[in-house]
Image (cartoon, rainbow, N blue to C red; front, side):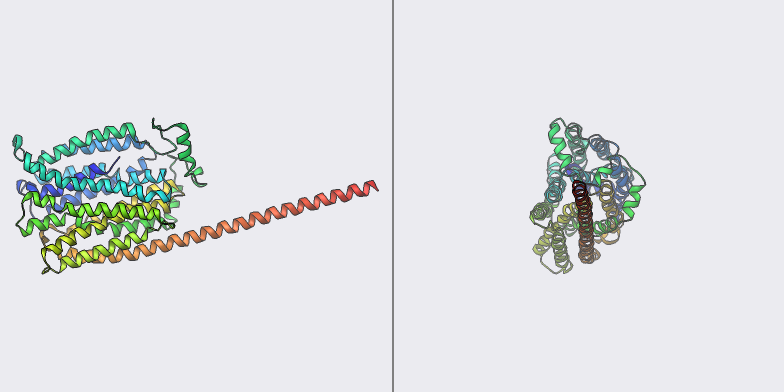
Length: 456
């Protein structure tokens, strides 16, 4: 399942807001931010339950079912008459949508080795960004060609088209999604290919943890290691660097300063998304290509770009062209998303149940922060300057660098301890073998001596 549809939906709400929804529904103050906060609350509630359901219900059934629920709710959005109805719809859409992002990263980690994950995670994340990119283009085209058709506003047609796009993708998921290697029934995989996909990723620990066999031991394993704490903190912090794009700050800025048409306000922010796609694919592919599979340089790169972009916008006297450059440069902050989840998959590769919880928790804690973050630092009433938000971006990027170092350090320490244990076990094994060989030699020599004595 690709993330295209869900990211298209998130972007559609932002694009609809600046394309007539605000005026038609008489929205005011921070109601736009409240829509996103309520959606985030539903997303948080559904996160871990949805990912654990993948241990019980085949993903090829669960993912498309949630997408159909989401699609029906999207159709409902096109008929709302007040902002309160959008609040209710977005809450339940958040629950349905929370099944897919971390769930797909979990599935990717079940099929690919650490050295293959970066590129695959990058392609998946980029599919969502393509949805964001397509939303601006689609909204501009819909506003130009369908606004007023059948008595419906252009922004309402946007949600109708989005819902129509959803259904064939859900059907494709029912037919084609492969589940995980140990349970796959995909018709396009032979039995030999299925067995190979299991063997190439099998670890000693995973042999004792069957898919779907949940127990309280999972809680002890998750809470007893650093992985859950470190990875959750990493994405809770680094995920907020995406605030420029997720809150459509550029679109709000263009609308607030005036002088731009509705199609231009929809089109121009697409440059940020385009740079986000390029950054994501290049960085994710690079991390797989490096011998050490190092993920941390990508987080350094995105933090640097976020700081530079925020500084350029804080200096309000800077020319408008520099502000365009800054908003486009901020697209680089999306590069850390694929890399961070690939890193977590790599860290937890020896325990698929822990991996499912860690991946879900990363996105959950990020959304816990995101539920109030835009209300405090990026309220719509702060357009066009978003001064608080720019300072928050600088602080978030610095915090990302610190937490990145912490996770890198803890991962290296764990690897050293594992290597030391394996070395001790190897020494003990050799010692046992030598002892057995010595005892066998002594017994053999004693036998020869006894036979010699009897012959004499």
